Figure 1 (cartoon, helix red, strand yellow):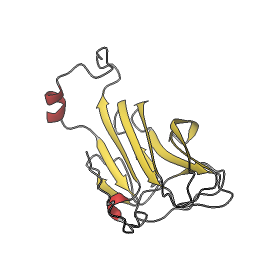
Figure 2: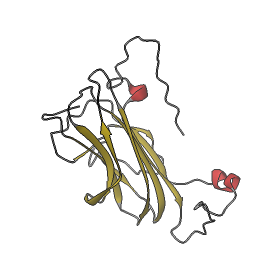
Figure 3: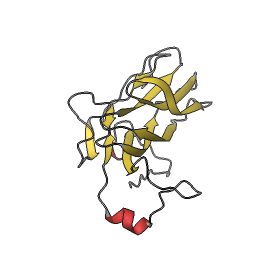
Figure 4: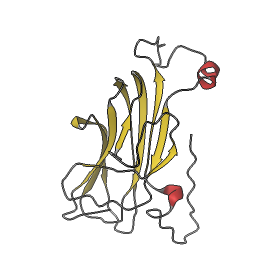
Length: 178
C-alpha cells in the first residue's frame, strides 16, 4: 500500500517531474482462480492469514513525461520499479507491461496525471496481452484549463501465468498531450 501526499497551500507543485506523485501502476495476486469466495466476492480466508503469506505484487512509476498522440490508445511506460520482488516488470524491455508470474486473480490499479488543458476528453483503462477491450475504462472531461487532473483506473483480472496487463491512456485534445 502506498500513501500519496500532495500539498494544498496554494504554492506550485509540478507532479509530472516529482517522483512522489509520478504516474503509478500496481498489480497484486489475490488468489487462485478456483479460490472460494464469500457473498461479498472476497477470498474466503481470514485476512490475517492472507497478510502473512507472500504474494506476487509489483508497483512501478514513471519519472518522465510521456507524450500521448491525439485519438490514439497509448500504453503508459514505466521506468522505475518501486516494489518488484516477483520480477513482474522490466525497466529495459516492454516497460509498459506488468506480467502475471502465476495463474490467478489479480487486482490492478493505475494513476495518471495529465498536463492541464481544457480541450477534449481523457480516457484511462487497462488492456490484457496488448489487444481487445480496455477494462476499467474511465472517462474524464476537463473543464478548467488551470486544472491538472489525476486519473485513476482499476480492475480485477483472471490471468494465466505469462499474461500481461498495460495501463492505456487516450486523449482527444487535437494534438499531443503529456
